Length: 288
Image 1 (cartoon, rainbow, N blue to C red):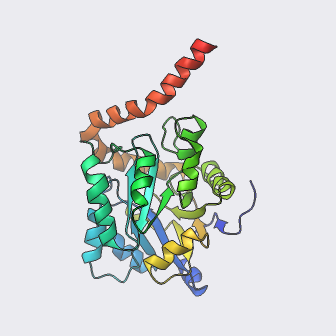
Image 2: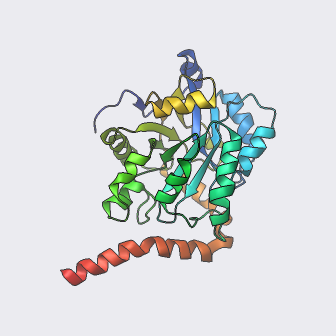
Protein backbone atom coordinates (compact mmCIF):
# COMPACT_ATOMS: atom_id res chain seq x y z
CA UNK A 1 0.00 0.00 0.00
CA UNK A 2 1.49 3.32 -1.03
CA UNK A 3 1.39 6.34 1.28
CA UNK A 4 -1.15 9.05 0.53
CA UNK A 5 -0.56 12.44 2.12
CA UNK A 6 -4.23 13.33 1.55
CA UNK A 7 -5.68 10.13 3.09
CA UNK A 8 -4.97 9.90 6.81
CA UNK A 9 -6.14 6.94 8.89
CA UNK A 10 -6.42 8.76 12.21
CA UNK A 11 -9.13 10.16 14.44
CA UNK A 12 -10.11 13.58 13.05
CA UNK A 13 -9.66 16.63 15.27
CA UNK A 14 -12.03 19.27 13.80
CA UNK A 15 -10.48 22.22 15.67
CA UNK A 16 -7.06 21.50 14.17
CA UNK A 17 -8.54 20.96 10.72
CA UNK A 18 -10.38 24.28 10.86
CA UNK A 19 -7.21 26.08 11.98
CA UNK A 20 -5.71 24.96 8.66
CA UNK A 21 -8.51 26.76 6.84
CA UNK A 22 -10.34 23.57 5.90
CA UNK A 23 -13.96 22.55 6.50
CA UNK A 24 -14.30 18.96 7.78
CA UNK A 25 -17.57 17.23 6.84
CA UNK A 26 -18.97 13.74 7.33
CA UNK A 27 -20.25 12.99 3.83
CA UNK A 28 -22.03 9.69 4.55
CA UNK A 29 -24.54 9.60 7.39
CA UNK A 30 -28.03 8.11 7.80
CA UNK A 31 -31.03 9.24 9.83
CA UNK A 32 -34.42 7.93 10.87
CA UNK A 33 -35.70 8.72 7.38
CA UNK A 34 -34.00 5.51 6.27
CA UNK A 35 -32.54 2.63 8.29
CA UNK A 36 -31.30 4.54 11.34
CA UNK A 37 -32.79 5.58 14.67
CA UNK A 38 -30.85 8.86 14.70
CA UNK A 39 -33.07 11.93 14.57
CA UNK A 40 -32.07 14.74 12.26
CA UNK A 41 -32.09 17.33 15.03
CA UNK A 42 -29.76 15.19 17.15
CA UNK A 43 -27.34 14.76 14.25
CA UNK A 44 -27.32 18.51 13.67
CA UNK A 45 -26.72 19.27 17.35
CA UNK A 46 -23.77 16.89 17.52
CA UNK A 47 -22.31 18.14 14.23
CA UNK A 48 -22.54 21.71 15.55
CA UNK A 49 -20.89 20.72 18.82
CA UNK A 50 -18.07 18.94 16.99
CA UNK A 51 -17.65 21.75 14.48
CA UNK A 52 -18.14 19.72 11.32
CA UNK A 53 -20.27 19.86 8.19
CA UNK A 54 -22.75 17.15 7.32
CA UNK A 55 -24.25 15.36 4.35
CA UNK A 56 -27.35 13.36 5.23
CA UNK A 57 -27.32 10.53 2.71
CA UNK A 58 -30.35 8.41 3.46
CA UNK A 59 -31.07 5.39 1.28
CA UNK A 60 -33.29 6.38 -1.67
CA UNK A 61 -34.85 9.16 0.41
CA UNK A 62 -34.56 12.94 0.90
CA UNK A 63 -36.81 13.56 3.91
CA UNK A 64 -33.85 13.96 6.26
CA UNK A 65 -32.26 16.57 4.02
CA UNK A 66 -35.51 18.52 3.87
CA UNK A 67 -35.93 18.46 7.65
CA UNK A 68 -32.33 19.56 8.15
CA UNK A 69 -32.96 22.50 5.84
CA UNK A 70 -35.90 23.60 7.99
CA UNK A 71 -33.85 23.51 11.19
CA UNK A 72 -32.15 26.67 12.41
CA UNK A 73 -28.67 25.21 12.52
CA UNK A 74 -25.23 26.67 11.91
CA UNK A 75 -23.98 23.34 10.55
CA UNK A 76 -22.73 23.53 6.93
CA UNK A 77 -25.02 21.16 5.03
CA UNK A 78 -24.32 19.38 1.76
CA UNK A 79 -27.52 17.95 0.23
CA UNK A 80 -27.05 14.28 -0.60
CA UNK A 81 -28.61 10.89 -1.18
CA UNK A 82 -27.36 7.29 -1.35
CA UNK A 83 -29.06 5.51 -4.23
CA UNK A 84 -28.96 1.71 -4.25
CA UNK A 85 -28.55 0.57 -7.86
CA UNK A 86 -30.39 -2.46 -9.19
CA UNK A 87 -27.12 -4.07 -10.25
CA UNK A 88 -25.53 -3.67 -6.83
CA UNK A 89 -23.39 -0.53 -6.28
CA UNK A 90 -24.46 2.29 -3.97
CA UNK A 91 -24.11 5.70 -5.59
CA UNK A 92 -23.74 8.83 -3.46
CA UNK A 93 -24.94 11.97 -5.21
CA UNK A 94 -24.22 15.41 -3.74
CA UNK A 95 -25.90 18.63 -4.84
CA UNK A 96 -25.13 22.26 -4.14
CA UNK A 97 -28.86 23.07 -3.90
CA UNK A 98 -31.64 21.16 -2.15
CA UNK A 99 -34.03 22.02 -4.99
CA UNK A 100 -31.86 20.11 -7.47
CA UNK A 101 -31.70 17.10 -5.15
CA UNK A 102 -35.49 17.08 -4.75
CA UNK A 103 -35.99 17.34 -8.51
CA UNK A 104 -33.56 14.46 -9.11
CA UNK A 105 -35.30 12.37 -6.47
CA UNK A 106 -38.83 12.98 -7.72
CA UNK A 107 -37.99 12.37 -11.39
CA UNK A 108 -35.61 9.42 -11.09
CA UNK A 109 -35.59 7.74 -7.68
CA UNK A 110 -39.07 7.95 -6.16
CA UNK A 111 -40.94 6.33 -9.04
CA UNK A 112 -38.37 3.51 -9.25
CA UNK A 113 -38.38 2.54 -5.57
CA UNK A 114 -39.38 -0.98 -4.57
CA UNK A 115 -41.65 -1.99 -1.71
CA UNK A 116 -38.54 -2.18 0.45
CA UNK A 117 -37.60 1.50 0.64
CA UNK A 118 -33.96 0.94 1.62
CA UNK A 119 -33.12 -1.72 -0.96
CA UNK A 120 -32.15 -1.42 -4.62
CA UNK A 121 -34.31 0.72 -6.86
CA UNK A 122 -35.24 -0.36 -10.40
CA UNK A 123 -32.37 1.51 -12.07
CA UNK A 124 -28.90 0.17 -12.83
CA UNK A 125 -25.72 2.10 -12.07
CA UNK A 126 -25.43 3.41 -15.63
CA UNK A 127 -29.02 4.71 -15.49
CA UNK A 128 -28.40 6.54 -12.20
CA UNK A 129 -25.19 8.13 -13.46
CA UNK A 130 -26.89 9.18 -16.67
CA UNK A 131 -29.72 10.77 -14.69
CA UNK A 132 -27.21 12.64 -12.53
CA UNK A 133 -25.52 14.12 -15.60
CA UNK A 134 -28.54 16.36 -16.05
CA UNK A 135 -27.92 18.11 -12.72
CA UNK A 136 -25.17 20.23 -11.12
CA UNK A 137 -24.03 17.46 -8.81
CA UNK A 138 -21.14 15.08 -8.22
CA UNK A 139 -21.38 11.28 -8.22
CA UNK A 140 -19.38 9.15 -5.82
CA UNK A 141 -19.27 5.38 -5.40
CA UNK A 142 -19.76 4.39 -1.76
CA UNK A 143 -17.53 1.62 -0.32
CA UNK A 144 -16.33 0.66 -3.84
CA UNK A 145 -14.53 -2.53 -2.74
CA UNK A 146 -17.16 -4.03 -0.40
CA UNK A 147 -19.16 -5.93 0.75
CA UNK A 148 -18.22 -9.62 0.91
CA UNK A 149 -20.65 -11.91 -0.96
CA UNK A 150 -22.68 -8.93 -2.22
CA UNK A 151 -22.36 -6.90 -5.43
CA UNK A 152 -22.36 -3.65 -3.47
CA UNK A 153 -19.02 -2.36 -4.59
CA UNK A 154 -18.43 -1.14 -8.12
CA UNK A 155 -14.99 -2.79 -8.20
CA UNK A 156 -16.52 -6.15 -7.30
CA UNK A 157 -18.99 -5.75 -10.14
CA UNK A 158 -16.31 -4.72 -12.63
CA UNK A 159 -14.04 -7.59 -11.56
CA UNK A 160 -16.92 -10.01 -11.99
CA UNK A 161 -17.78 -8.65 -15.45
CA UNK A 162 -21.24 -7.55 -14.28
CA UNK A 163 -20.52 -3.87 -15.01
CA UNK A 164 -18.23 -2.43 -17.68
CA UNK A 165 -15.04 -0.75 -16.43
CA UNK A 166 -16.00 2.45 -18.28
CA UNK A 167 -18.22 3.18 -15.28
CA UNK A 168 -15.17 4.74 -13.57
CA UNK A 169 -14.95 7.43 -16.25
CA UNK A 170 -18.48 8.52 -15.36
CA UNK A 171 -17.82 8.95 -11.63
CA UNK A 172 -16.40 12.07 -10.01
CA UNK A 173 -14.91 10.38 -6.96
CA UNK A 174 -14.64 7.25 -4.83
CA UNK A 175 -15.24 6.93 -1.10
CA UNK A 176 -11.73 6.02 0.09
CA UNK A 177 -12.43 5.88 3.82
CA UNK A 178 -15.77 4.37 4.78
CA UNK A 179 -16.20 3.84 8.50
CA UNK A 180 -18.09 0.60 7.97
CA UNK A 181 -15.41 -1.04 5.83
CA UNK A 182 -12.20 -2.87 6.70
CA UNK A 183 -8.88 -1.05 6.33
CA UNK A 184 -7.92 -3.33 3.43
CA UNK A 185 -11.08 -2.34 1.53
CA UNK A 186 -10.41 1.36 2.05
CA UNK A 187 -6.77 1.03 0.98
CA UNK A 188 -7.88 -0.69 -2.23
CA UNK A 189 -10.40 2.10 -2.80
CA UNK A 190 -7.62 4.69 -2.47
CA UNK A 191 -5.51 2.83 -5.03
CA UNK A 192 -8.52 2.57 -7.32
CA UNK A 193 -9.18 6.32 -7.14
CA UNK A 194 -5.57 7.03 -8.06
CA UNK A 195 -5.58 4.53 -10.92
CA UNK A 196 -8.65 6.14 -12.46
CA UNK A 197 -7.78 9.76 -11.66
CA UNK A 198 -10.86 10.24 -9.47
CA UNK A 199 -11.56 12.52 -6.52
CA UNK A 200 -11.69 11.22 -2.96
CA UNK A 201 -14.32 11.44 -0.26
CA UNK A 202 -14.81 9.88 3.14
CA UNK A 203 -17.67 9.36 5.56
CA UNK A 204 -18.68 7.21 8.48
CA UNK A 205 -21.62 5.47 6.78
CA UNK A 206 -22.95 6.03 10.29
CA UNK A 207 -26.36 4.95 11.54
CA UNK A 208 -25.79 5.58 15.25
CA UNK A 209 -25.38 9.10 16.61
CA UNK A 210 -21.99 8.58 18.27
CA UNK A 211 -20.50 7.49 14.93
CA UNK A 212 -20.98 10.95 13.41
CA UNK A 213 -17.71 12.65 12.48
CA UNK A 214 -15.50 9.58 12.79
CA UNK A 215 -14.50 10.08 9.16
CA UNK A 216 -14.44 13.49 7.48
CA UNK A 217 -13.73 14.94 4.08
CA UNK A 218 -11.82 18.21 4.36
CA UNK A 219 -11.84 21.00 1.79
CA UNK A 220 -11.07 24.68 1.54
CA UNK A 221 -14.69 25.79 1.12
CA UNK A 222 -17.38 28.00 2.60
CA UNK A 223 -20.37 26.73 0.60
CA UNK A 224 -21.68 23.38 -0.58
CA UNK A 225 -20.90 24.36 -4.16
CA UNK A 226 -17.27 25.14 -3.30
CA UNK A 227 -16.97 21.92 -1.33
CA UNK A 228 -18.21 19.78 -4.22
CA UNK A 229 -15.95 21.60 -6.65
CA UNK A 230 -13.00 20.76 -4.41
CA UNK A 231 -13.96 17.08 -4.58
CA UNK A 232 -14.23 17.29 -8.35
CA UNK A 233 -10.80 18.97 -8.60
CA UNK A 234 -9.26 16.33 -6.28
CA UNK A 235 -8.37 18.93 -3.65
CA UNK A 236 -9.70 17.15 -0.58
CA UNK A 237 -8.05 15.55 2.43
CA UNK A 238 -9.73 12.51 3.98
CA UNK A 239 -9.20 11.84 7.69
CA UNK A 240 -10.73 9.05 9.77
CA UNK A 241 -10.64 5.43 10.76
CA UNK A 242 -12.82 2.37 10.54
CA UNK A 243 -15.09 1.24 13.34
CA UNK A 244 -13.93 -1.73 15.44
CA UNK A 245 -15.64 -5.04 14.78
CA UNK A 246 -17.67 -4.85 17.98
CA UNK A 247 -19.07 -1.45 17.02
CA UNK A 248 -19.93 -2.74 13.56
CA UNK A 249 -21.88 -5.56 15.19
CA UNK A 250 -23.73 -3.08 17.41
CA UNK A 251 -24.65 -0.98 14.40
CA UNK A 252 -25.82 -4.04 12.49
CA UNK A 253 -28.05 -5.05 15.38
CA UNK A 254 -29.52 -1.54 15.56
CA UNK A 255 -30.19 -1.40 11.81
CA UNK A 256 -31.77 -4.87 11.54
CA UNK A 257 -35.25 -3.94 12.88
CA UNK A 258 -35.59 -1.31 10.15
CA UNK A 259 -35.06 -3.95 7.47
CA UNK A 260 -37.06 -6.87 8.88
CA UNK A 261 -40.49 -5.60 7.70
CA UNK A 262 -39.13 -5.62 4.13
CA UNK A 263 -37.45 -9.03 4.19
CA UNK A 264 -39.22 -10.34 1.08
CA UNK A 265 -38.43 -7.41 -1.27
CA UNK A 266 -34.87 -7.28 0.09
CA UNK A 267 -34.35 -10.98 -0.64
CA UNK A 268 -35.88 -10.55 -4.07
CA UNK A 269 -33.50 -7.68 -4.88
CA UNK A 270 -30.51 -9.65 -3.54
CA UNK A 271 -31.49 -12.62 -5.70
CA UNK A 272 -31.67 -10.44 -8.81
CA UNK A 273 -28.28 -8.91 -7.97
CA UNK A 274 -26.76 -12.36 -7.51
CA UNK A 275 -27.99 -13.73 -10.84
CA UNK A 276 -25.00 -12.45 -12.88
CA UNK A 277 -22.60 -14.15 -10.46
CA UNK A 278 -24.62 -17.37 -10.51
CA UNK A 279 -24.79 -17.38 -14.32
CA UNK A 280 -21.04 -16.80 -14.56
CA UNK A 281 -20.38 -19.66 -12.13
CA UNK A 282 -22.61 -22.02 -14.14
CA UNK A 283 -20.95 -21.03 -17.44
CA UNK A 284 -17.51 -21.59 -15.94
CA UNK A 285 -18.44 -25.03 -14.68
CA UNK A 286 -20.04 -26.05 -17.96
CA UNK A 287 -17.11 -24.80 -20.02
CA UNK A 288 -14.55 -26.23 -17.63
